[in-house]
Length: 60
Image 1 (cartoon, rainbow, N blue to C red):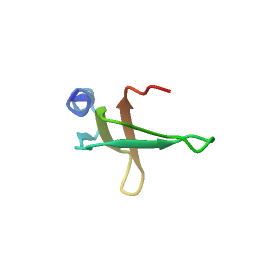
Image 2 (tube, helix red, strand yellow; image 1 turned 180 degrees about the vertical axis):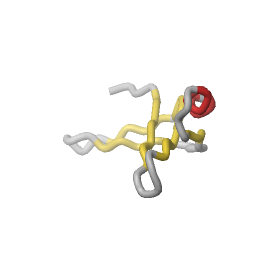
Image 3 (cartoon, rainbow, N blue to C red; image 1 turned 90 degrees about the vertical axis):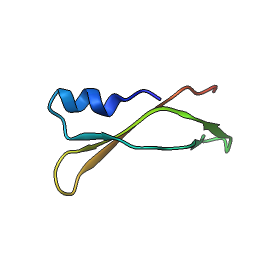
Image 4 (cartoon, rainbow, N blue to C red; image 1 turned 60 degrees about the vertical axis):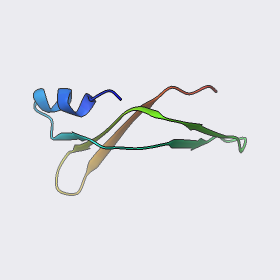
């Protein structure tokens, strides 16, 4: 897994790597795609707002 959170933290962002086992995406047609993440990061914008950045390789 890519440690993107550590790299963002070095650049001044309040970011942390989080462990995610699987990613599921449901397409409009009803098809569900499952993959393992390459990187998953939580970026804290402020006390209430958080951004989740999920990177994966998808075969669509």
